[in-house]
Each structure stands twice: as structure tokens, then as C-alpha cells.
Image (cartoon, rainbow, N blue to C red):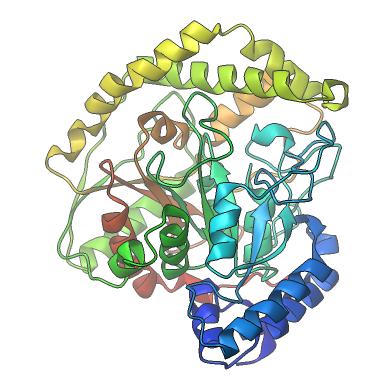
Length: 460
């Protein structure tokens, strides 16, 4: 394999190559550091690159390989979203308002390290992970490797841009309203929002009144499954990696482009769902067109949890004077949602989810758009007020937050064909609660048919 092929091989393939001594961890880290130095100035995906530490950890990983160690991610470089604590580094959350270095690794980073991963650096996000674009005054604008004038999405936009450009084989991400799936769709990646509580949020107990989860941005389903096993503590059983390796059988699939709330849906996203349905039908699945029952109250409940959670985040920063004006505006709007109202919205989610999930009484997977339109302009909402930004987010991303409210898994995968401008589009595979295995199995079959892992942005 040439160097570019190695850079785009993905976490699962690189783990195997290191284990079989086809490549060393140091060689991988040096490869990615070189690509970051050459390409990231035009993308701005990394907030900080931990080069010396990564090289030292790679040498230690290579020594373990020589000693016969077979950890699942031994020697594999990984990027970390700057919402995750890495010992000795300030967890910035996309802002200059935090100043104290983390005393220890967060639980997800600790599990990655225990599995042998080497941390390359920390990736950019918008302030406090609020919006579906990645820009802000502290660390600038992150750009989409497919078109630097387009948004990579957010809030995990730095992670997605790094993986799409071949600056890391995979990266951690988080999702409170679509922040894994939107960047995956915009950057042509696989992005799974796992079942709530599948991976611990430690040191936090919950975030945004239970909306938020953590996961990964990857190029392939196999990579997502491997990393989910590590994050969920099931690597020894290969619970999810095994599911990705297993054909799904004949599934009952429903297609829908009905948004959960009033929104304009671009015809290109309708086409993406229809084309995915055609592929699934050709693969032998029973495909029909059918809409879920979205209660109006569910949207209101989600918004209460989202805005109430943002208000809590704004209140906890040690230097609120350093927050951008829009973020402070989100905090003011969020303070209009009393804590008891947000808690009641969280409790109401159970009954609302039961109604939405009634569609799964006789189907296995629901296919819907990931976004309501193709990637928006880079820095689409820069300089706008919180209220105008909120309206823009609702219009661009109407399909994601509802599944944070219900808590069940939702997996964004690349659509069969790109947008009219050649940019990636994404569709979501939604399953009933605790159905990651089904989604990964079906997505792996679709990946083999569509071949999205062979796509690379020209910038990379």
C-alpha cells in the first residue's frame, strides 16, 4: 500500500496491519503528522496536535507489539474531540472560557488508551458544541475537505474533517442534537449515535438533560463497530464488530422524508432516501414508504432539554466573559426554560418515544435523511444572533434531534450519489431501542454495495 492508501485505510485495517507488523505505530503517527502539517492549515480540523506525546506512545505500542500484545487498537492513531478530557490538556469545548488542564483522562479516552490507541491531538468544535457548524472566535473556522467553502457540520466538525481528509483514521465525537450524524453526512463518513448510555460520559453523569451521547466519526462500518466495542467495553465479545461482519438477513425497511417538525426539505435529500431504498430493495429487503407518528409535543420537549442544557453549560464556564455574543445569547434563551420544565420534558420523552417507535411494530429499520439540505456554507451562521442561528439550525437539520430525545440508535451513512455540487449527502438508518447490531449489519451490507469507502476528497 502507498502512503495515501494507508492514511485512508481506517482504524480496523490499521489495527490488523500493526498487529501483523506490516507497519509500525511510529510510521503511522509520522504519516499522519506529516499530512496534518501539510493539509490542516487549509481545513483547521485540529485545535492542538500532541506530536511528541503521540510519538512516545507509538514507540511504547511498538514495543508491546513485539512482546505479543494483541489489544484491539494497539498502535492505531486516533483524534479526540475537544469535549473529551485528556490528562494535562485543557478541555476547551470550542472556547477560550476554560483554562484548567484536565487532571486525568475521561472515561472514553481511558478506554481507547487501554485498547492501545495513540492520541494524535484534539479536534475543533463550535463553542460549547451548540451549533451544527464548526466556527468560533477562539479557534477559527473549520472547513469541509470536499469543498473548503462548505461546512463540515457540527458540532463534531473538526473530527469529521480530520477523518475525511485522511488526517486521522478515526476520531471521537459527541451528539446531543445530531453532532455526530450531521458532520458524517457532510463529510461522507459513517456516524453512529449509539443507544443512550452505551458509552459512559464520565466525568459527566449526563449532558443536556440526557440528550447527549458519545461516539465516533469513521470511514467505514467496520471501524465504527470496532470503536463502539472498545467504548462500550464489549471488545472481548466483538458484540458490534461481529454484527458488522454478519449479513442482516431480509429486513423490513420503511422510507420517510417527513420531517419531525415544519421544515423545507431539499429535493436532493428526498432523492438520497429514494436511491437508498432502491439499493436496499435490490439487496433483497422488503421496502415500503411509511412515516412515523411524530407528536408535536415531542419537538417542544426536545427543545426544552436542548436549550435548558445549554443554559447549564453557559453557567458552568469559569470565564463567561470570553464566550462569544451568540453563545451568551443561547444562554439567555435557555434560562427562559426552568429546570423543572426541562426535567418534565425529559420524563415526557418515554411516552412520546413509544408513539414514535410504534412504527417498529412491523418494520425493522427506518430510513430518513440526515439533514434537510446539502452542506451549508462554511461559517453559515457566523455573526448572527442566537435566535436567528436557532431558526437556521432548525431549517437545515430537522431530522436528528428527535432521536436524541427518544434515546435509540441512529446511524448516518453516505448516500449512493452526492449532491448536485458533488458534496456528500447522508441518510439515517434508525432502529428500535438497543438495535445497534441490526443497524451495523445492514449498513455494512449497504457499504459493500455503494462503495463509499473508496471516495476521497480531492483536497486530500
